[in-house]
Amino acid sequence: MITGAGPDGAVAALCQRLGVSLPTIACDPTVQVALPRHRVDLARSVEGWWPEIHREFPEEEAGWHALVSDLTSLARDRDQLAQHLPSLPPEGWRERLRCWRILTLRSLRAETRQATRQLRRAAGTPFRETLETHGLGTASRQTLEACLWYFALRGPEECSTLEAALALQRLREGVAVVPRGPAVLADLLAERVVEHGGEIRL
Image 1 (cartoon, rainbow, N blue to C red):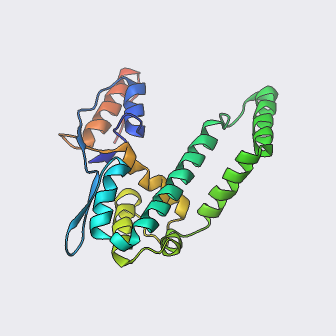
Image 2: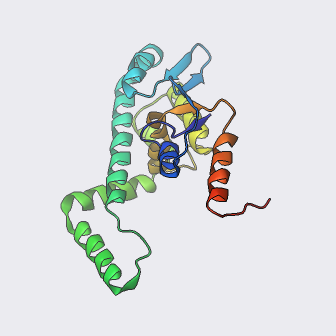
Image 3: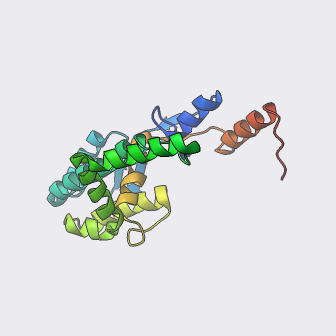
């Protein structure tokens, strides 16, 4: 299973850029978390989460909505800021001047300053603290922690809120099963390297 194979995912973009096709079967729900009483299905579309949340955590629905809204906003702000960054490192004095102008002028805009402040705050806040702030109970935290371990291999005490937002964003990129396993992607990349005169040594 791999993430990022959906239309907006990193793996899909890589395959498109290399001109290779990766045989995949999309998974929806993206993640199933086993709890003592039920499985919680987290679909690719967040709208599909709410019946599950209502059934499993009815008293915590408001906290889930607030948390998902905050994480979505963080991921969106980070993506928007990243899109406007110049290519680095700049080559030559003209590129350096252009880079300086972009970074300086963008930092003066009020919305950019606000987004940057929020991202810095989220980068310095452990995800576990954010979960507690939103009033999520033990089972809700276990569900989100399981997702975090699956996508980032990190626990909520060692993962910042910003990292968690970006990791959980992969839910929306989708998870896909590759019939012969993720090694197929490595084989395709290796073939492309050799086609372009490269040599791979193990």
